[in-house]
Image (cartoon, rainbow, N blue to C red; front, side, top):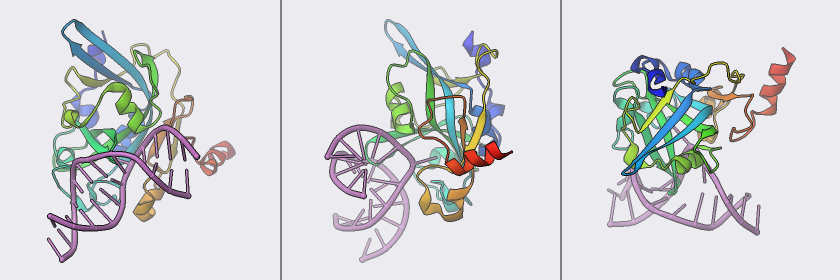
Length: 205
DNA sequence: AGCGGGATTAGC
DNA sequence: CTAATCCCGCTT
């Protein structure tokens, strides 16, 4: 039963970098409760990004900025932070750390496992495929609508973790260069390949 | 009130 | 490379 493997609050009660690394390979589960039953979608998380809060200029919570939009990030860990970007796409994040510590992990891509019919390679596409929007902001990820679980069969393909700079945050100066984007290098479903310099560095070892 | 821009995507 | 599209955060 998947629910027994649902990640506990303690998993999210750590810094965003740690959570972002460990979320790669986990299963994101979306359950649509309809009058005629429940529809379950499952995707393997293959790409994440950590946003470290006040000091991280790439984060929405940079400088401790607390506004109606970012309020959820200041709340307890293990909840969904969903925002609208470019007037047309939603992005799903997982709140981490602790109350008053506005850190989060952006879920950037999934590899379909069950019930996913459209592309999930990119944060906007991921939300579109799972029907996630601003109405899910603040949702508890230990609930039954959206949650994350450890794969039922650990014997499946192992994660080959790779890291590189985060996407689309060039305005953040040195923070844009931190290797806080994590991908499963064994997956062909990430939104974009890691920079060649990173790959070269890894191969050179 | 008004204004500028964005943790993206698709299309030329 | 650029348009699309609109909410939000900050300035007047």
